[in-house]
Image (tube, rainbow, N blue to C red):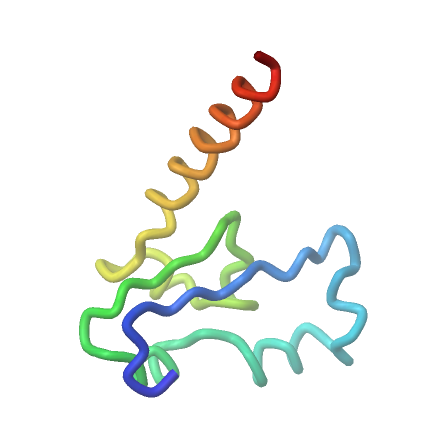
Length: 92
């Protein structure tokens, strides 16, 4: 993540047991969870992205998800609009 221009973390899908390859949620958070210390490695002001919904405290801290660098809410809104547009095009 050193000097990254943007940082994106993905959602672990707990409801689908997608974390099966990880010994535990704690292990996942310890190894890959995004916190202030890790984000500090990126370029100053690098935007923070996540497709949503977040599992705060697992893949990202609540503080980062709500921070000024976070574009998560915008990304989620735009993702919904994009999927609606694709479905409209496919429907004809």
